[in-house]
Length: 382
Length: 246
Image 1: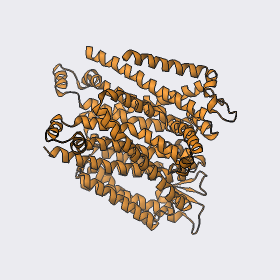
Image 2: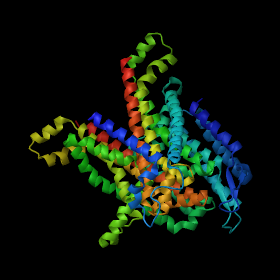
Image 3: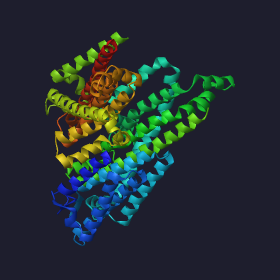
Image 4: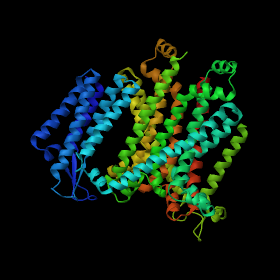
């Protein structure tokens, strides 16, 4: 028997037995009544879901083929998702907009166990980078289709979405703008700084040390500290204010994220350039290339995988940190998280948190794949 | 150069202690930042006790994550746990993409407001660097050393305790240091869910737009992080030297 399978099956079975599958709440903030799978689904539905879970569990315990394990795990995920959706439909009185059907502990534990099972199977298959990205795109497409079809419309998180639909689109766009905008600005500044660190090693400890100190300032403090000078700048320079630079809002968030983003990119650029073989640089010089040509044509391309690794760290970190920007009026999906914490409305917290985690995960996966492709291409070249 | 750095560090430590012990004597420094007659020094709580509470939360979380992460790292590098290795690698990668705020927010419904969700978020976030470094540390112990240890008649357990863990120790400690520093900063976010800490000062400053408060909370947190980082680094060097001497 597969030891990982034993652990996961035990956890999943215990959750099904002892934790509620969904929680029925008569409105969005009261604690609700726990319901088990059998209580909320018609007999054939509960039986079907249990059968699918048994198959996934059997696969986890005894199947040795990674593909079979992956397929059975995905079957389990679909069954659990469908059961939650069906429970939402069954428990919501027709036309009611006040009751909330929230996925319960058993739902989350099952999703995590099945997710782990699928992840483990995928890891064992050692998929190529392109396949991984394709797999991600497919899963996102399936979930997106289900959401667009309204499959989960009666579940609590989607109820919160229905109330906040236009704001959600706006905050999501703002979240991406903040994360990518500060990344772009950081790349423009950090690349030359990294090159400088490489060319003038005497400056390196000073530059990296300063950037290191910035990293230790907590995000909310840095946001706050920047509010004062940016506010003063807006008051003194009318043009700055017209450009949208203000003490509160997006400006301090972008500047803070930019400052946090510098260290990983500068450090990785310097490290990547150091990795470039001296022979390659000398050969390029020998061919009569100028300093700048060597940098742009030889050194930077060869250092690209390492630089991209730094960019990956920054992007994932930014997507998470933008959340905090909501505290200073910077917007982004964190607005839902903190609003939800303030109202003790967990569904609203999840409406913000789930997309953030998904975004960060997708960004990490895509950039990891890119780094791997570039790395392989580079090592293949003599 | 090292001497100058030591002086700088001791100065920073002295400054931190002086500020936490007698914050009011620094009032003139912060007064220009507090507008409209707002108090220049945080007056809704004791700064020292807030700093200690935050440090306590961070250290407790770090101790728990060290215990679990090193345990897991040892487990998956033994022959019996080898099957868990690829999955745990992937999990470490996935885990690092989870923003701590999201963990905090999701932990609140499970355990309520206060210190507990912060502890959980810090614990979860601190696991990853330690686990990863434990794995690398244990995996990079040279095979020849292991064979020599077996040849000397050491049991697997003796080998782990007397050879592998000491050799992996510098890397493990580096992981602990990394997670401590990240967590000192992250702990301030815990104040949004009513955990005691310096985040309280920063948030009070944000709410009353009092830059003096924000700066105090931020500077004390930053100084604590830097000093912890340096202190741990010094400890590591000492340990490294003792391992090398053996």
